[in-house]
Image (cartoon, rainbow, N blue to C red; front, side, top):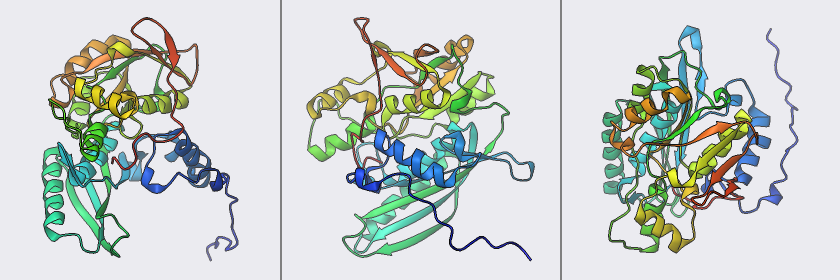
Length: 353
């Protein structure tokens, strides 16, 4: 007879939720409060070797087959925005999370939570967009689910995607593998996705329209690995933007990440929108950008490889890893002053992915 787990098992909640009344599922992640909730609640409850890597996906080894597994949910409003839509976002987001583990994305599942009254034409547009994105990323959508919720309970459409990828390299790619002296490589300009959505919501018009950077990144990661670039860590710059991603990596590696403000490319229209709306582009979400931590000897080669891809034409080296301030991200301004680039207390932009 197998042992049956006790039915009276309880776990005291480590985080008093009343302290965070404004943190809701719709706000996503990227801020200090959500990081605390993840660390103190979910990691406490679910902690295991795969989860404790604190990566964009779990690296698994079933029956000797090395795989990566990831999942994400998409609640963006509006469903269609300049440069992309919720369908392409749902495919590319999970594809990119798998790529950040060093995996080649292969299969996706998708779950649709549909609000009663959503026009079938709208749903069909989203489904077609997902199929086009899957073809572009060379993945297959192989299983899924649909649920319908009452009118007024779903804001149109929510989508979840989960994905499985194959790890074809033995390289240890994760935040804890970052080393002192590593070069920090950024694949392109930052802030486009978040500002594309906010500009549309606020009715802002610019001489150069702002479009989301939503794109699959697996091909450029594959080229880095096939070229033998010594990659230690990869992270796509979604909720919380560049600053939040660097803070998460610095905290896990317990090393200092030092970047130069002048080296981080920001489109003029994005910068203008941020100034009007009071946002810092370093904290604004992206959906087609990554940061790579590579051995310093491979930095120039890594930049050259990324620039061969449409999503990496503006790739550049923005900083390096140091040891003086473990767990901290520092920003050197254009006049030479340095300051701490910390996590925000909350999320700048709700409902942007």
